[in-house]
Length: 140
Image (tube, rainbow, N blue to C red; front, side):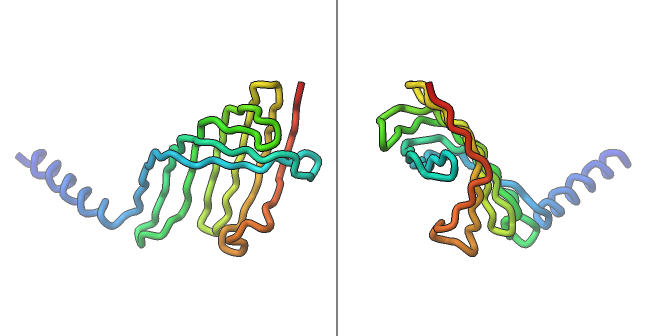
């Protein structure tokens, strides 16, 4: 009897504490995808398409967003050449308002773009100062 009482007490305490603690929310959604393509610091292309995003958002006990991770898969098309690309991207958001995304885009005509960007959502809401961390452009 003591064991059952102890287990029930732990269960009820656990339920109560989960209401007070941090939590994560998982969302799967369809996105209108876009990505500017830079080679040697110059924008050479712009891709648009549709992607599926698997998003995990983590909130603190006050309900404030602490971080978010996004895994994105889909297809996009070059606005310059009409080449079709497969999308593989991983994005991260932190509580300072910085989003970092890492992309790997493979085209059906041999183009291959790999890179990462950083965007300060709070200080640059219109994305006028996108930071290029890395950009590699490969082609046939």
